[in-house]
Length: 165
Image (cartoon, rainbow, N blue to C red):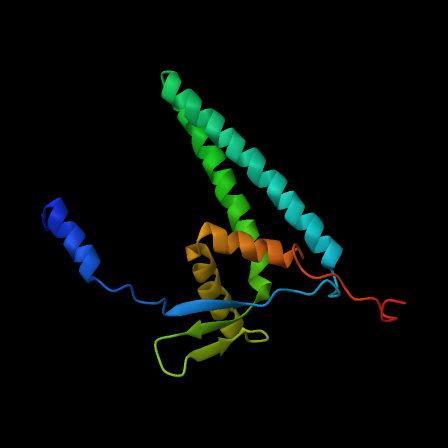
């Protein structure tokens, strides 16, 4: 049964609650520009951006039509399909960032525990599942920062080998 409180009581409860830090945090290690596959990653990330913009535009158009027109079953089905497509693009982006999560840091103990990414096997599948869940819970800004770092945006250029001569 829900608990009913006034707005003032609710605000007092929020003020009294201390925000606890996250218990599990993905440890993201950005690739270097010199790492193998840099340009392929960049092209794939740009393709994700194009897909995401197209899916978001399609969803926005369909949502506008649903609000302005009398929604029929075909329009609602089309909107559901567009939302499913948008979720698939996001799942692909999570799969793109996942290899750069090298560990999961658990902050519930002192010192914090690290679950390092296993090489392969059932432990790796378990790790990937936990890391995927953490990536899906990240804020949009954090995820976009990881996606940008995975494609090498805003990273320092490789220094010249001859010391600038």
